[in-house]
Amino acid sequence: MKQAIVARTDISMGTGKLAAQVAHASLSAYEKADTQLRNQWKQGGQKKVVLKGDSERTLHELAAIADQEGIPNAIVRDAGHTQLEPGTVTTLAIGPASDERVDRVTGDLSLF
Image 1: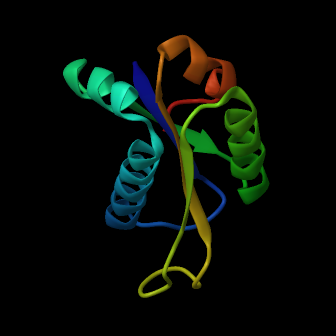
Image 2: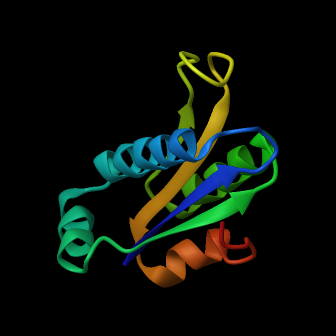
Image 3: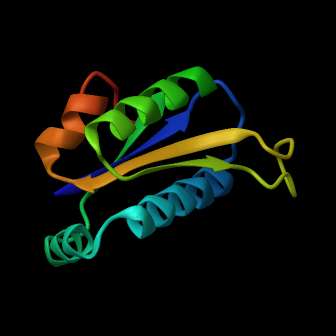
C-alpha cells in the first residue's frame, strides 16, 4: 500500500510551501478512501512517494486515470495567501491503494 503525491515543477514553490501542499494532498486523498484502504495503509506505515509533475495538465490527466481505475485521489488548489495566485493547482495525491495500482498511474514519473 502506498500513496503518490505529484507536485508541479513548473511553478515556484518554496520548500515550506511544497511541504504544506504535499500534506494537504495526502490528507485529502486519504479522506476519500474507504475505511478498509485507510486502515491497511495506516497499519502498513503510510508509505508515500513524492513525484515530479511538469504541468497542471499532467496532474489533471493523472487524476482522470486514477478516477477511471477507482483509486482515491485529490487535486489541491492553493488559497493564494502567500506565494501563489488563488486557485493555482499545486499537487495531486493518488491513493492509498496497492503499490501496483498506484504505479500503473504514476510509474513513469521521477522522484521529487
